[in-house]
Amino acid sequence: MKTGCRTLFFLFLFVLGLNQVVHARIVDRVVAKVNEKIITLSDVTREAKVMKLENPGRFKHLNLNDPRMLKFFLDQMISTILIESELKKIGRQVTDKEVEAAYASIKRKNKMSDEQFKAFLKKKGLTLEEYKVALKQRIERIRFFSFTIKSHITITDAQVKAYYEKHKEEFGGDERVRIAQIFVPVPKDLPGDERLQRQNIIMKIQGELYKGKDFFDIIKKYAKNPLVRGYADMGWFKRKDLMKPIADVAFKLKKGAVSDVIETKLGFHIIKVLGIQRTKGRKLEDVRPKIERILYQEESEKRLDRWLENAKKQANVQIML
Image (tube, rainbow, N blue to C red; front, top):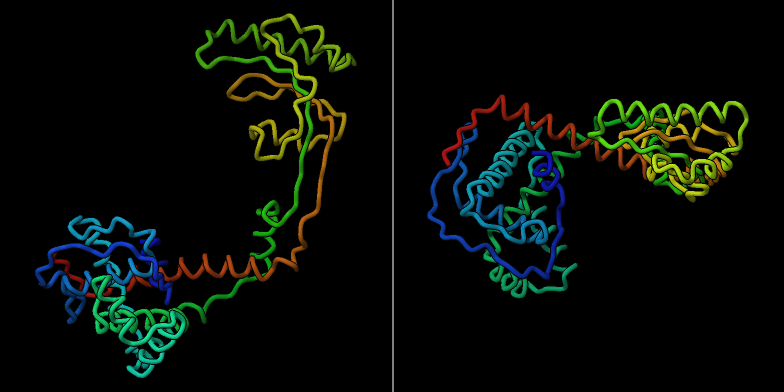
């Protein structure tokens, strides 16, 4: 449902490179009723064609003979009627004059005359009248969004800061760590006694480190032991490039520090931090507008979904597919 709701608000995504039209044998009939208003199969078909016109990539293989596709576009029409009803209730209906102004704007942007536009629509299986009906509905949806959803959303400083902290890498900040590692692998299906043997080996190595033995000398010492793998320099890693248990430790250690034993699904690890690199990203205030737009969009979609879900529960919706 969420993906469908998002599609409702992409007004004027007018693509001239559309290659396919909807091919389906249509016999018009009533397919749903919302309160006292009916939805016909031709209404659903029109919505499908217009949505494909707006988003040809997503609906490249549109097939209205597929019941799932038909139900998806019917759901769009049900949402449309609920939105139209709400606008009527608050006295914000869209006038024919507004539709004509929007149509004229689209023609200008695409540098088309009236006849050229009609010819284009004909190739896509639409009449100008059908397109204007759909255009009116899209203007209604945006107006509904503005008055019913947008005006009630407030993004707080706390929300912006939380998003910034969680997505620092997206804003240019970088943190990398360079490590060496002593690794004792433990295959998944290893018998218990053999697993214990390998655990004893890593604990023995840890003991040697506690006594002050050099990390790299230990790698050399165990070089011929088939159960121990030593890596004197594994290179640089971002947090996302390491297994979480290792990353959680590596990015807390100081340069030159050696970890305790770290257990992962692969086995036992001891790491030494060889270097740390940290670069600052853009400041919060520099990216605040972008974060606010992201949070606003997320919150808008949630509220729209909730509104539609509640409106459908309150309405008398009958589906006859």
